Amino acid sequence: MILDAPQSFFRACWLTILLALCASWAQADESIRLNVGVLEFDAGIPEDLSSHRRLGIYPLIRKAESRYFPYLLREVLEASQHWGVVRVMPGDYQTAELLVYGKILRSDGLELHLAIKVVDSAGRDWVDKLYRGRAQLEGGKVVGDREIFASLYRQISEDLLVAGKRLSGAEKRALPHLTRLRYGAEILPEYFAEYLASDEQGLTIIKRLPASSDPMLERIERMQAYENLFVDTADEQYQSTRQDMSRAYDLWRQFSREQILYIEDYQRRSEKKESDFRRGSFGAMNESYGHYQWFRQQEQNQKELAQGFDNEVTSTVMDLDDRIVTLDGNLQAQYLQWRQILRSMLQLEREGS
Amino acid sequence: MLRPLCVWMLCVCALMMGCKTQPLLEAPRKAIRSDFSGAWEMDYSMNDSLEAKLDQYFYGVRRQLQRQSNISRPERGAGQSYGHIPSANNIISMARFADQITRSTTLDIEQSYNHIDIDRDDDFTLSCKLDDDDLDPYQNPFGREVCGWDGHQLVFYLSLPGGLSIQHRLTLGPKGEQLNVATSIYSDQVAKPFTLNRAYMKYERLPSDFRCEQTVTRGKVCTLSESEKNRLKQSVPAQ
Image: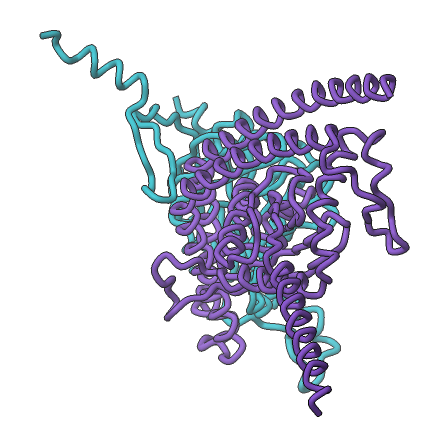
């Protein structure tokens, strides 16, 4: 019994160390905050112009929404405090570990349908799902400044969190390295491609890591930081667009919603009730025409309002376009220069060794 | 003095009589594009009289019944009917309804090669995608619309619940200064449609002193046009 005492003491010590290690690993996994890039959504405007009226699509409004919704999702992701830096991006910039792609399938102020796909830098799908949300109103009214589709964005955020929990700690820890190496491979494939490989599922994996003091890696990191600066500047533009258009957009959504609710109500009533008028009578004709006239006039008002929205928001949306194009143009020109410089540096280094 | 007026009246009558009343065909005549664009106001003197049209309609029905009775008299046995006799109430309803939906006193028409918008006061705008070969169908929860060219005429055909259909057939006068809109009401309770012609003449709209723009948050925002601003500047005496 006396001899067993040191043994049990050591066992207890081991157990404590093991638990502490597990806890620190778990903490390490928790502390990995992946950066998220929410790309400007696909506006989902059909090429067939004649279908726009039937589907209630106003192209400029959709275009504005494709920049507005990503920002709303960004706000929700940021508020969840589970992620690193969350940015809205104008294009497919490989500077974040997670990229969120979205397509607007339906948006009429009452219903919002989004197709969302989230991919990490290994090429793994985290989320690939169709989200449908209905405006959250109280007594038919919007409460305060609350976003009417907030629950849809929260659902995306939660799904992202659940998908993240399915990944092992090692897989998660590999993502920032993968992002950097993939970024490097995009800029200078002849140097960085050898660090990457594909597994049997087609996912990108790290074959080996360059030394942390690798000068080329340091250069790539500096470039990545510069690209992040660009994305941050673009992100600010999205933020100001969101602020500029929110009032006009909320009014537009309210009007569109009211019209849809009336139609739904009319259809419900007409299913239950027969007309009070005899078929072929003046009253019956008036009733039939009156409903049609109401609908067409509402449609017309909606078109005018869409025109009003265009008049009010076009300059904001176009300004954003211009600024992004200018920024992106500068970045692309910079890339070209950098690529050439890095190539010549690589050549010199290889010749020297 | 009276001669040119008579010729002109005859032209308009011929124009009105030439208006077809049958619904837009599935295979309309080849498009001969007319330019309807401009501002139009109702020419009351050339409009159909509702009473006269009703008399004419009832006369037609009586004649048809008479013909039917003459044809079927030799063979007609006991219990055989004259066929479908429309209720007078239904016909009067159609006439009243036709009169009611054709009261727009002005039309503002904007037309391009492939689109037309006919803005009517007190009613919704008739819009159509103009295609040489195809009609433009449109459906919503309350009815179905088809429109397109039928020869030199532009036709809007609207099918509504309750067996009601409405057709507007627009025809331009020879010099482009007269416009006739023949509105036919079809009811599944009456065999023959009721048609009412409305005539419009072109007028020049005065240029507005204001330039207006629709917005969502501030409604319609109007500003003085440049010409008006200049005029006001000139009228203010220099101090």
